[in-house]
Amino acid sequence: MLVAACSSPVPRNDARPEPWTEGPALPSPRLEAGVTALGQRLVVVGGFDQNVAQGLRITMDVTMFDPVMRTWSALHPAPVAWTHTNLAGSSATIYMLGGHETQQFTAKGEAYALDTDSSPPQWRQLRSMPPGQERGASGVIVAPPHIYLIGGASTNAALATCLDYDFSSDTWSMLPALPAPRSHPAVMRMSDGTLIAAGGLASLDSSSAAAEVWALPPGALQWQPRTSMPSPRGGCAYGTVLGQLVCAGGELGLAALSTTESYDPVGDKWTSLPSMPEARAGTQGAVIANRLYIPGGSASLRFEPTNQLYMFSLLDVTE
Image (cartoon, rainbow, N blue to C red):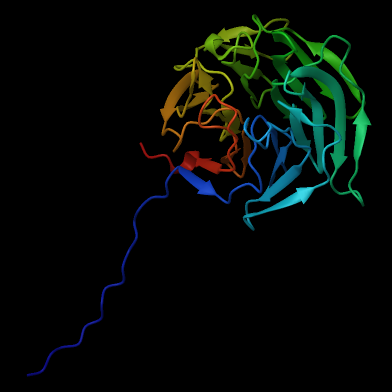
């Protein structure tokens, strides 16, 4: 009996990519570290790298992640050991603009820059914040040559004041203050220059998580109200993806959160997105190639740093 030959069908994988994925683990755990994008690299500076039982150490280590090679590498250590660092990146330079020192979270106003393309790379000191304006835990917006620090936390209180650092002239100036104090807000800059501040903590206590959203158009003398966040929170890992402010995790009351939402500032509308794989607080986020990177943090509101790297793609969210 003759049997006709036939080729086997080629297997197909039509599954869509998941919006949340996990990347290579950090070289060491980090909690309340500074996080920024530097070109197409992710930079993590300082923060706690040990839990309470281990001594709750604050590290000076600076580590950088290459999303293409999927590798971590070390940069020159920071000049100070801080948590809640206001970290920014522009061109080939990393800026440390204030933060918190020691386990008492003493607010510091010194500023430093690392020119990564210099040989060898060395940190240099910049002009400090104006006296009385020392802070960490601000919302950070980069609009070269300006770096805006929105709100933040002094040693004893959340702050409403906002600072503008011009790195082309190494000078500080004040922006209009927020309508109310906020530390750990989520922030963004629209294409027309309007600044957006969302949520945050009204005090140094996570029980004071807020949902208000404010906008400061160019040249405006005061912030204007926008549609509030669906979920009050402070300390979410945030970034601007495809013109939207994505806010993932954070803290509310006694709990770390996994909730993820995005804000369309043009339509003044919030959208619920797939939650993080695990609750996460005590970390920041940075956007590279339309993907939000979230390194370290803690799954609870305890001092338990992790070394996980979560990545979120808004393009892979299904309706």
